[in-house]
Amino acid sequence: MNPFNKQQNNKGKKKNGGTKNPLWRNIFTSLAIFVVLIIVYSFIVGSSSTVKSIPLSQLATDITAGTVKSIAIKSDTLDIVYNNGDKREAKKEPDSSLTQSLVNYGVPKDKLAAVQVDVQSDSGFVFWVINLAPFIVPIIFIALFIWFLTRQVKGAGMQAFTFGQSKARITLPHDKKQQVTFKDVAGAKEAKEELSEIVDFLKNPKKFLDIGARIPKGILLMGAPGTGKTLLARAVAGEAGVSFFSISGSEFVEMFVGVGASRVRDLFKMAKAAAPAIIFVDEIDAVGRVRGTGVGGGNDEREQTLNQILVEMDGFEPNEKVIVMAATNRPDVLDPALLRPGRFDRRVTIDLPDRKDREAILEIHARKKPFAEDVNLAVVAERTPGFSGADLYSLMNEAAILAARENRLKLAQFDLVRSIEKVMMGPERKSHLLTKKEKELTAYHEAGHAIVASVLPYADPVHKISIISRGRAAGYTLHLPLEDRKMQSKKEFLDDISVSLAGYVTEKLILNNDVTTGPSNDLQVSTALARDMVTKYGMSDKLGALALEGSGGRAMFGRGVEDGEYSEKVSGEIDSEVSLIMKESYQKAEEIINKHRPLLDAIAKRLVEKETIERDEFELILVANGITPKKKLDIEHQG
Image 1: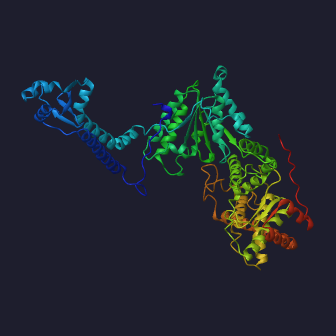
Image 2 (image 1 turned 60 degrees about the vertical axis):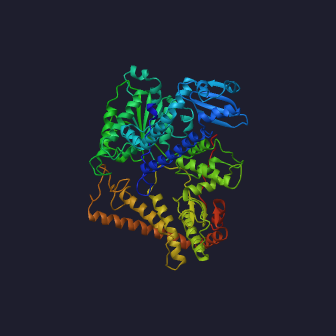
Image 3 (image 1 turned 90 degrees about the vertical axis):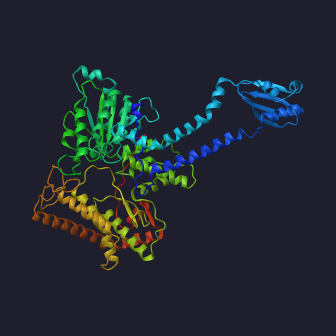
């Protein structure tokens, strides 16, 4: 068995909600097959003796009467053929010639001479088969029955011996179908430059060893979900032409303590045997969480597995050409022992792609897709800020599905634009019909968002307004930044909160201080953003430069203020500051809505008529009402 292709058998379905016990099912199946085989064998054996048997005395009488044409002697069996074509069978005396026996029965010699007698001797093989078949065949049937019956039990026993073996999937260097190189990974220029050193070491380690350099044993890929961490790891193996062992962190953890550690040992043993090689552990935070904090539960199996990983990484010799790569989107929860020098000491951050990188990623995913003449990937890249590589793949796939659904052979720009909204907010809910009053209220709600976003100087410009339901939203206003940005200022946050509250303000204005459940999500988003400004980003004038919460919540795993480590007075001040930010943003949105009430009515009326307003048409309405649209981003297509 190839050690790189070892796979455990499925453990069987759970008792709850699954099928019946497979052992009893196999017993019943085996019995049914056994009965069928016995019936078939009995039929075959019975069909071989359909010729009527007669005594030897009757044969002597028939020969004397002259009705016998020929006799074939097969051992002690006589096959008799009569003149009229009938066939009979008889048995002669053992160890006695047929002629002598017939003469003893009084058959005249002249009558006997008229009968054609043929002596047929059985070969050794046929003789033994004929004589042993009645004994051997039943034994074979019983042996097959026992084997089939015990196969399930035997499989379970074999699983016990392979329980501690690694479940890693391997991509061999000569497997061109699964091989990935840096050409298949768009963007991530800095990450590819960092990883090119690893490729160079795996190809030519002598250059590094001669000068006394030691390449990092562990490389930790950090980034948001979908940014291409796994793809980059595969690309490193493809560029270097080495074996690639891939496994998820959760595959180490089992119910029994010690199994994960055993699998770690087996994985490193396989990789060292196949060196040069790369071991890739995806979602390493499943086993690499901080120990002793109570976070993730006190799991002895997980901690034993982590300890074994640490020991194996320390056990590398300087000339061993095995690189360990791992990926996570939660580097803040990893144990410090994993990140110390000598283990995962090379950390590569993979950011979300910028506009040019998004366009390059779209071009890779567009290789096998036929496009119409109007497709402009630069425009698609402009309208997808914040999209990861996985999001862009989903976008292209959804566009192809939309075109195929409408029986078209090429993808149009319209398909790509629709797929952007589908990936961001979900599919259109055409069956979700609004009443006339709800439709009008939704139009005013979205118009309020659009007006405030167009007037405030630090808000993102509006690209599209729609009152067609998508996902959980009855309508939406799509506003995107003019350019990609890595940081946001306090003014931008405050304008974003005002834009989010604009729908709530508009509903109160239209319904005479009454509100509906429509703005609930806007209130949640804006309140959470205001709290982050106070507790994470130090944007509160009263509290000042304090980080009171971590990026994942209040607990920061030893890297900041823990939950409950600030007083009730500070907690009350946080609440008052959040309330103040919300109140000031509400007043700002209210002033803009009241000032531009004619524009609000015009946009709402157009939305009720058309249901969707694109950016160009929306800007014409703004200009007609005395508002200058924000400048468009000047896009230079990079060929």
